[in-house]
Length: 106
Image (cartoon, rainbow, N blue to C red; front, side, top):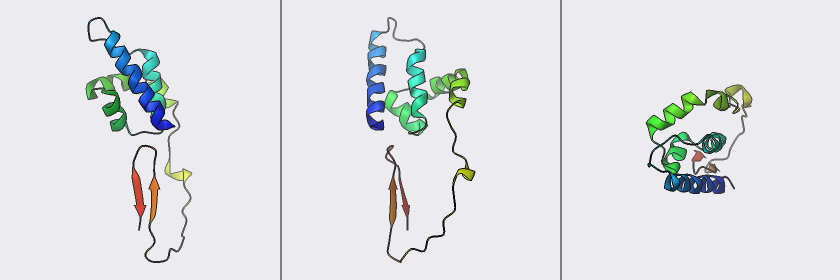
């Protein structure tokens, strides 16, 4: 589902780029707001790569939209509970995130 949101936004960016008159210009606020909502699920690097946003433009947009970014809930270490779970030897736990990142506990 989240993969679809990123793909849909990629299509919107492609359409926006194709419709620009001079080939350059600021990213429209409505597109940027959709980008901000992907922060919770995807790493910045993946978003920038998929949407073809340069690092300089990314930095500018982040500075411009600090109010929007601050609305996104942050994950803090006090939100986690330490669990001491004995695991039999030879067992692996693999956690796969929608962004494609995998965490292995051996």
